[in-house]
Amino acid sequence: MTGRRPASIPFVGSPRPTLGVEWELGLVDRATGDLSNAAGDVLARIDALAGPDGHRITKEFLRNTIELVTGINTTVAEAMDDLGESLALARRVTDPMGVDLFGAGTHPFAEWSAQQVNDAPHYAELIARTQWWGRQMLIWGVHVHVGVRSADRVFPILNSLLLQYPHLLALSASSPVWSAIDTGYASNRAMLFQQLPTAGLPFQFENWGQFESFVGDQMHTGVIDQLGEIRWDIRPSPRLGTIEVRICDAVPTRRELAALVALVHCLVVDADARLDRGETLPSMPPWHVQENKWRAARYGLDAEIILDADGNERLVTDDLNDLLERLTPVAARLGCAAELASVAEIPRLGASYQRQRRVARENGNLGAVVESVVRELWT
Image 1 (cartoon, rainbow, N blue to C red):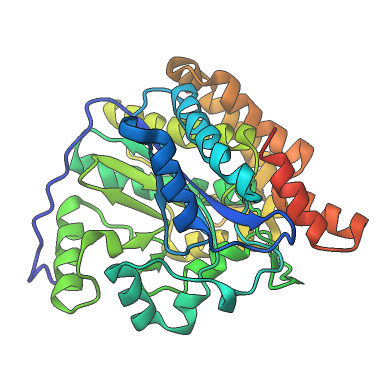
Image 2: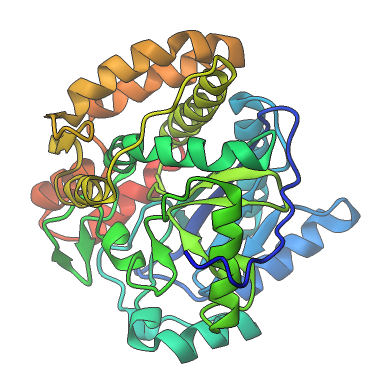
């Protein structure tokens, strides 16, 4: 780091570990199971239905997508209630249109070339710059924001969260099939998204000043024009005073979503409390973090992950059991004990990528996979 052109980036700290969630959902034509570029019509009807009270359902990069966004919440239950209201509102519009909502990291057979990009200067610039790879971004995810008190805590917490990167990706993996081909990956979305020039794993800065120097260099050299163009899998959100965890594929059930949100909330709050106790948070060399991401994307819940700088390894589900036990008291304090406990149900019942493959085997067609994902969203 040269530090020659540091940007001044105020971090609006959150005095409490508040919670916010963004849930991207695809729009599917009920008759064909293919994606529908209907977001403009859907959002216009939602605007009319919501009236002056407004709503928190937004457009995204592609016209086949809507995003449900919560307000600022204190607990996982509040966030899920918030999302539930938005989901109900969206369905009041989409059901009569013959459009279903689809919660997975990728669609199993839709073709990227048939998808339309929303009209916005920053989307047009993204396509102009990234070309073929930008057009491939036919993907959906879940983003979880957790409030952090001050800038000096952001990177110690962010770096430590990278140790649980493979757990979160394996649990949420829901994108095994791409363009009607089983990729062999549990999360093909994770591999696709990192092709964008500012996406992928974050740099492990030691402090906020190094991050400001990095952003200054990125802006000076024209890599980015605004902070939001840094699309890391975990990133600071200075304006909101949060760490934003963007690791997870979109998931099809509210049960899984609540479990993942609870796990992220507990991880951040636990790390913050350890800093209060004067602990140095654990971190891992970037090459191990990168390998863990690949292993989780490739093998999902069967991944053998690297645990520490010494290269010790363990099956991700075995390590998950110990992690949940350690976080149980944190969940009790945050009021999300039930949601955190339900994390353990995902390996028992099968993650979405496993369920999708099972449906494909049993039915012999990918249309049945779409139907199963749509159906699960009602559970």
